[in-house]
Amino acid sequence: MIEIIEATDHDLPIIREIAHQTFHVTYLPLQPKEKVDYLFGLMYNPPSLLEQMKNRQRFILAKDETGYLGFASFEINCKNLSVTKIHKIYILPTAQGRGVGKKLIDTITSMACENKNQTLSLNVFRKNPAIEFYKRIGFKIADEINIDVGNGFMMNDYVMEKKLS
Image (cartoon, one colour):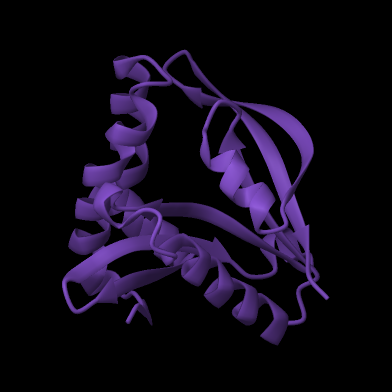
């Protein structure tokens, strides 16, 4: 059975390890290695993860009897709106297709509804196959954005949204 737990700063090594096992596998087929290495270093170094936690991002971990399977981070009332922004969601390649991602998003949805948020929002790289997963669970493409992440790199994303009832 998949269990979802809220992560603390003590869980940052677990989050970083899951990211290490998933980030490059996910993005190397889609983007240059230099960009993938840069983004991983930018987002998943220990001080950056700690800063994200201090700046209103909550992290949750999915685990079962075999160990940790994935994680997500999100922010309730993002930009002081009734929007819950999913910043990250990564599932170990060996755990994909087992309902882990849906369980993480269902947990975030419950927390968003408890806080009277009306929308879930996330950014996803325009060529990421996960777009189809998000569409299957009710997300729709709301916008396209290009984000300068430094070092000469841009993130070319869709903004996807799901209305909550």
